[in-house]
Length: 179
Image 1 (cartoon, helix red, strand yellow):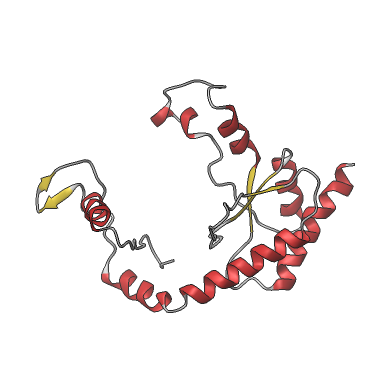
Image 2 (image 1 turned 45 degrees about the vertical axis):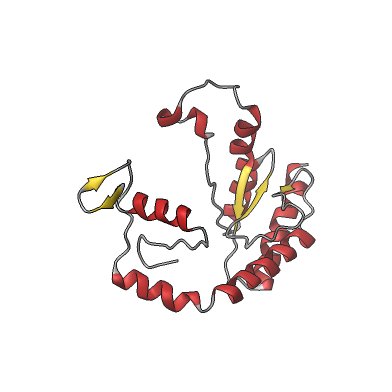
């Protein structure tokens, strides 16, 4: 949400926040004394000022994302397309609108040809990446399937309903060209 690398964390759990601060300070609870591995994740004052201004719009933007996600769910009818599951009693802010489709790469190429950009978040299952390679291919089949099928459709507070409908129409048209 910034104009650089920054963000913020909020919580009413004091213990959890203390841990987050330690991790963001390179694992240091006090200057030059690291108690765990961490990162330098401190944002500068300019990024903090930008986030502070944007915070006033957060509820409005989250409501907008929910509305657009509802429109997508209502309009998308492509056979085999799966939506993320929102557990009962929970509410998503739809930071991303992630769908799954067994022909994800072909669908993505089809949308790109129509000027619709999509993203693939987490294109490879974590357990298959070199840093975490504890198990081999096939050890977590659902994670591997998800990594091969997930696709993030355009979703942001400035997206218009008509733009979302264009995306949905293009996704739905994909079935006709694949038949």
